[in-house]
Length: 327
Image 1: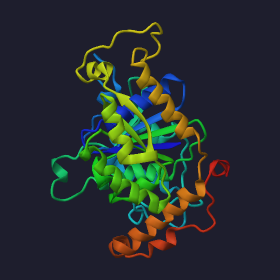
Image 2 (image 1 turned 60 degrees about the vertical axis):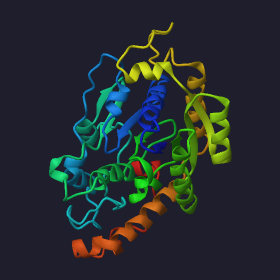
Image 3 (image 1 turned 90 degrees about the horizontal axis):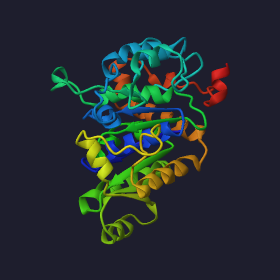
Image 4 (image 1 turned 135 degrees about the vertical axis):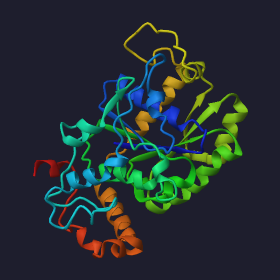
């Protein structure tokens, strides 16, 4: 399952991405966390206090190599240069299994707090004035487009803040999007924007309230987002200690990294996982959106830039899903 975390800057979406990833890993689930935010803080959020996280080699600078690898022997892609971030897989493309023993995972995955991690990389001085961050996110879009993940496997992506998450078709690549919202007017403003785009494309969203301190906070969220409010987290001394680099008290089960997280907040993470698992993957929808956004990009700019009709990259006989890994 693919899960995105979005929200206003400062809402706590990176913290929530890390908590949810650690919750899954502690339960023994195969999970890969992906830092797709322009502010690359997920490794730090995943690492326990006192640990120095080792950031993985970033995906963004190796986008050309990633394209060449995923292109495989797909005859519809005439060259690596003609492959864009929305190019969908077809027969001959190199497909990926989650955390598989392949070149891409071997090169670009490290571990932070016991959780496998990928990262797009920072927006650096060489990018100023010549590129946008979504050029780096193209690597994540291609990765998810070629990923054949199965039930009980999780790819958790910390997305860019605010409505900027809509600037590419990446927002359609997920089974469920968690929108993290503080109980303020600004906190729920991104929700309204995301809700409208999500409904247009049939994207499942669920609001997770964060930093809730009283009944009035919870009532405000219920009034603003209605039935889309899935659960909420209360103010957490455990999280604050982690953010300040202080070790949280050890629980009775030392193998559980979240052992002393507040019971209400642990329950909220369980509710979130149940929501993710409640609906099976709709492979046809994922592939239909991938093709739609590829054709949009082709018509808008990519045909002119590459000098090709990139609609020809769409393989009408490609059937997405786990069976493709057996071909």
